[in-house]
Amino acid sequence: MRFLVDTNILLEVLLLQERTQEATDFLNQTPPQDVAISDFTLYSIGIRLFRQGAYTSYEQLVDDLFRNRGIHLVRLPLDQHEQVAQVAQRFGLDYDDAYQYALAELYNLTIISFDADFDRTPRGRKEPKELLTLP
Image (cartoon, rainbow, N blue to C red; front, side):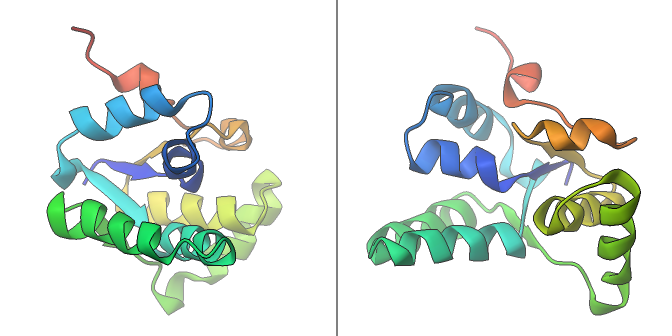
């Protein structure tokens, strides 16, 4: 694993937002064994899709990411959860960003995100376009 894909990257694709193509290109060009998604991201997207009654979309997402592509699902072990609070306080992050950051630290992953809040941290983040290979 090399990259931790933040929730906003997947939502960009699912909701067909302004940077959908960039996010899609990154996911399609990056070998799945290099990509990880947190359990928090999966749950957050599940909550959003279920609120909209998009149960089939959730099933398709799980199939596409994990069964078909083989992307990694990572979680923060319980003994590491104190890191979330420490990271949040140190860098002024909200819970979801602090959780992602703690995971990136634990697994030494590059955070792929459109969220500039990660720019306040030593680890920072990369946007998908920075890692795309141009044709």
